[in-house]
Image 1 (cartoon, rainbow, N blue to C red):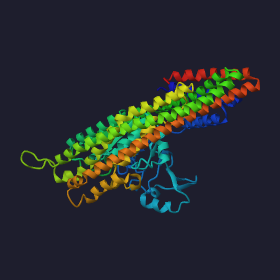
Image 2 (image 1 turned 135 degrees about the vertical axis):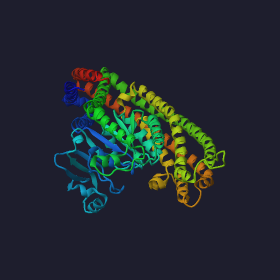
Image 3 (image 1 turned 30 degrees about the horizontal axis):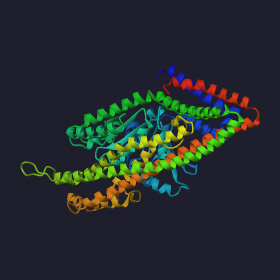
Image 4 (image 1 turned 90 degrees about the vertical axis):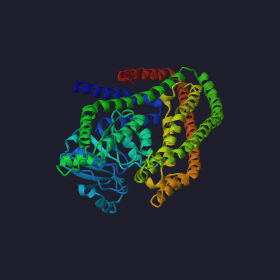
Length: 588
């Protein structure tokens, strides 16, 4: 986007915001909308203002031990981010431009504590944290690295435990302008990582999303590199099709930029060095050079949601004011009767939803039994021999990869169950919601509903799946996993060093199958609860919105100045046309 076009975009955003705020600031219109509604709209406008004013933000995500901090240091060309950290001491680090380097800890009580870089290493931070009057909310680092003139970099803690994902981290993800996800070629692209990308990152529809497969320098040959990259690209294409995948070595690149000794070249250096260069070029070309365009589109989307909220409320109120006092009284009586009927209809729908989701659950259980029958064959194939009677897989390979193979197979089966039922669940809940909305005279649910979307219901389901599949020894959070599946996978890991891991898996095979099927039952039961909750929320929102409109219309009629208030409404609706037109020009 040229400088001229950028000025136009900024001006358009300013004009649209101003026009929307002029409408809700108008005392007559504000009175019609109601104090609560105006307060919510003002709060939302504050978020839009923040998005317009704060630096363009690149958020770095990934599990622990994926080398996020090393990658950031390689981008900056200097050692700023602490590398030797633990989950207990890891903080959210905001890195922004400053002519003079500085470090501050922002505490949860709002206090700011000056630090130096040496303070945020693991050993020093553990000591300092004990002296702070409150927990650290984030660490703000300023540095004069050239890339920071254009973007703010936010390094987040590891994301192993989705269920207890910190709200602050979630807010950074939602408000990010671009995402960089760090993975490791030395560790499986776990089900947790895949579900995290699908449930937390993909729904945000980021303009740019990088998946960096780090530590490529540890692989022994280009054959290994190509195999790993095909694997990661295949998974990324399925989950986050818009992601760009690079195979890099953050450690090697940092050493190169600092002029330090580099890891020995195993014939792969040209690949990962070129990939890091391509990543940097893309970062500059597609993000830094386009950051204003990316930012503008996200702000336009927020403004469109604000406009739709105002428009829907004013239109509903306008429809009510077309009635005289007698008709309004009749409408109010009919509406309350309709609400009772609607509530009863919703109660009748709940058993239908229960039976539908129960049918899906039983179908999923049947698939899982079939899957486990095939899984036993796959496990036994790990002991297959070639034509010379030699083991196809060496004991070392089985020791290194079998557990991941087992977890991935089970995780993949879960994922396929969810994906197969996703559309059916969505259609079921949305159709019921539309029926409720239309009964109340609201034809477009998306315009008015504040309730969580079906995507969010499915996200919650995905979290349960993660708890069901991942074992305690992987992430050390036993309280967040169903005990049946957790204890079995944990026992396999405990016995791994004592005897043949395949024997252990076969010995526990029936127990694994039975308890995983129990866990999937829990997942679908939780899904039903969330689906019913969504419909209840939609019902309550629609009822309150319509009831409020009727009450306001009755008050107008009783005040005797209905004509003037109706004129105010029509004026407000007319004033919305211009910002709506300007947003439509942006493709919204």
